Every structure is written in structure tokens, then in C-alpha cells.
Image (cartoon, rainbow, N blue to C red):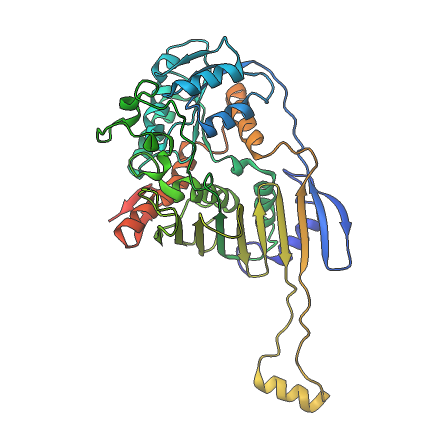
Length: 453
């Protein structure tokens, strides 16, 4: 018998009620088509113990989404915001109050004693330096994914967290979802047998989804701190496209893999307890959005995961398509020897196939035909399907991820996605870019966090 969980283990565990450790499922109904539905519920509730005051560094679209979610958690107040474009600072005051402190220079925020934590939602090429500076200043940090712009920067963030003993959370918010928690339980209980393959994708089909963000009419070097934006990258004349659509350029963004593959790696590693792949290969191209961008709009990645004490060897395939007719869809699917599950942030669909003895031996089939005068052919039966849906009113993965962050600050406890976890999720995503541009496979040591030459 495999040392990894199987269907038999799953049945034994579910009979013993072992699946309710984190998410308590409530069976809603069972129909006559081998399907049943269960409700995913949060079994923990948080209240404010101490007020936490936060600052937002990077007040663009994701920054506002983060701040809006953060302040809905009990006892959290936004008191300051930083951005390099004046219009966003004005928008922050309009949104969060005229009394909040605003600045173009993030270092001013780090000097303030009234700020307990910062959200780093800047372009990717600033993540490492601002996060390290904030931790050195004693601030808790919620840093948007990917944790770094380049794979070589990860160790500096890990060292800063270890040295300063502060809370650091990477913002792959789906990791904290009900869906991921349920999938983790189901895999550990043997619901799909032995894992051998996983796949995931993100499909988009709109200008906004392809990063063609709107550019304000007043954008200029008077309203934008262009020199600060460039950071350590080459000086060049002001370019509003580069500033507002920074994801399209290699100096500032990390392409579709750094933006979206990283979510799938975070979820997969959480569900499987994996440290990451050892071999990475990517291919794709610029198929539609030929607007001057330097990165592909369609990318596919293939990954080898070696056997570890936590999981068997398996393979992973990922893809992102920014001109996909299925439009705005995403999923992560895990496939095992006895079933599969599609994992979404608020839903898990588990499909289990019954195991039947196969009459595939020609001699046995002939013997059965002669003795019993019947065909050994078996009927193809529909699989058993269970759909786990989030309860009505579920606040979502984003809220859960921030709740985990603020709880860690209050209780001096660990977070679900610290610097080491964030590095292991970011590295294979960033190395997809290296593989794509070099047109060759990249080998990675996920334990020691090093490229293998």
C-alpha cells in the first residue's frame, strides 16, 4: 500500500469524522446523479483586541483593494498613504478621510510612530527594498505578490524577517480561502488517492485584464515622481505608459507568471505542503496585445515536483491566456489515482471514481466467456461528485488573508504566507520568465532556495 493517503484511508477518516478540523461541512442535499453538495463554513470568529493602524504604500488598483479589505476587519484603521502620483493621494484622502497623512516618499511613513503595519502594493521592482526597510523600521508588512522582482532578491526579505522578528505576509490572498483549506483536508485524507498531476490556468479577455489600465489626462513629471519610480533601472524620459501600465515592462513587472502563476503556486504548495518544483520550463508568446509591451500575453509552464516526505512525485502544468474566449475564468485541478478535485477560492468539486477489478487479462477473459458464457466487459458508471460551496455571506479569501495577518500581529503568532513560503511561491513563477527568455529549462533547489547551474 502507498505511504500516501488513499481512497480507503479517506473513507475511514470521513467515517470517523476526521475532516472537520478546519472547515466544518454541512451536507445540504444529495441528488440522484451521484452528486452531493456540502457547505463550507468558517468555524472561527475574530474580534478586536487592540487597534492596529496601517499605512498604504502604493495606492493603485490593488493597493486600494487591499486597503478596502483591510479596514473591514475589526480594529483596523488606515492613517496614511503613499504614492508617486498626486492624483492617487487625492483619491486616498477622498476615500479614507481628509485627516490621513499622504506623501510621495515611503520613508516618511516608516519614521512615524503611529503606524503599526504597512501594505506594500507598489510595482514589483520596489517590493524587496520597501519591505526590508519597513521591517528594519519595526513595522509589520503585508507585501503584494510576487514577493520580489527577481529570484535573487528573496534571501534579503527572508533575512530581514528573521532578523527583525516582525510579522511579514505575502499577499497571495487566495491561499487563505475556504476552498484551499478544504482541498488540503481532502488531499490529506486520501480523497483522490495518490497525487500524480496538477494543472491550473487563468483566462482573461479584456483590455483591463491585459493590463491596459487607464492613464490620467494630467499625468506628467509634475504630477508623477518619475525618477523615484525608475528606482535602480535605467533612466529614460517620462513615459506615462510605463508608469501606469508597469506590468507590461520587464524592468518593473514580472509578467503573467509573476502576476498570476504565483497565485497558483501559493495555493498548490499550501494544499500539498510542497516546497516547490525542481525543474521549470516555459513557452508562449505575444499573440494579441502588441501595444509595446515586453512580456508575453500567453504563457505555459511545465514543472517537475520530486517525491518528498510530504507528497509523491507529480507534474504540474500552468497557463495564462490574455485573449481567451472563455474569459475571466480560473481554476486549480489536482488529479490522483482515485479521483480529482477542482479547487476555487470559494468552492471545491471532488470527483471520485470507483475502483473495479479489470478483466484485462486475455486468458481470464476467455475463461470467463467459456465457463459463464458472458462478456467480461464492464459498464461505465458516472463518478461520485461532491461539491463544497462557501456558505452564504462568506467574506472571501482576501478578508481571510488579512484576518490572518492582523491576528498574527495581535497574538505574535505565525502567518500562513511568511517570507520563506512567499519566496518558494515566487521563485518558480519568476524562473518561468528566465526559462522563456533563455528558451531552456531551469533547475531549482526548493529546499535551499538556489538555482542549480
